[in-house]
Image 1 (cartoon, each protein chain N blue to C red):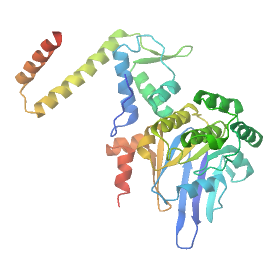
Image 2 (image 1 turned 120 degrees about the vertical axis):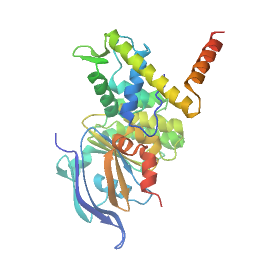
Image 3 (image 1 turned 90 degrees about the horizontal axis):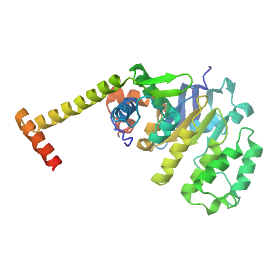
Image 4 (image 1 turned 90 degrees about the vertical axis):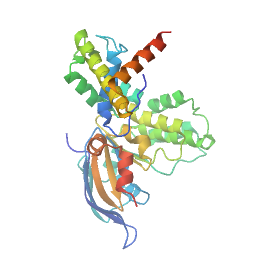
Length: 123
Length: 233
């Protein structure tokens, strides 16, 4: 997963979302030790203080845990991770629906679209 | 901890009618990477040269770690000028030794390691390197000092995107919470995600000093887009 940052939104908020996605997708597994702020800042080519701020936000939300001896790890609370994953999925669905509605499709049209598309995907 | 840089009522004019720097007051903390942004001729280089002590202000005061500009502050400031002052006929090794003799806070090992990672041979003369590699070598020299304040005047001007990425990553990798990096540039979009804060200058005056994410939050646009709006002719 790349560190693609958008222009018009705060950088720390986008870093929070990207790390959440990595945790939800299992790229960073439950209980896994995370790279240091400095390493991740260099990887994403962002300011280390901004990355630090994103980490602090993720800690507040309970998704990552700081241990005195072991640095920062992903939470082992898999329910919490599932919750975040579901919330991210809901956001995508909401955005998808909003875009389809703005193209003039009704809800039942959208359902047909999704059904057709997923059937195509299976073959 | 005390502020790193304090500037009070600073002014400099090269002729009577034109103030290159016009009554600037600002205080910068430690541990930040700060962009000094403004169109050409807005006074960025003049401001930086006064902080280094290369230019004397007409009025006002500069303090670094509480001290007036002098030998002590010069020892704490690492400066990358907008034009090179190194002799092209010198080998990289010779320049490393020169820096080691000149600056007690210079780590030759750190510079050698960064040069090695780049595959730059220290036996060759500086003038044999490409423009991009010359810029990288000069940045490596400056960032290998353990200074309190780094002043980088247009470090990414005129280099290709890969060299620019290298330069930005070098700045991030050498980040030190005790020190502050001030980077002047007009290439904002390339650099804004590396910055904590930005200073906007126009015609020698300070227009704005705020954080990158503040601008994005408040105006819903990048610093680059906001800059174009503020400075639209």
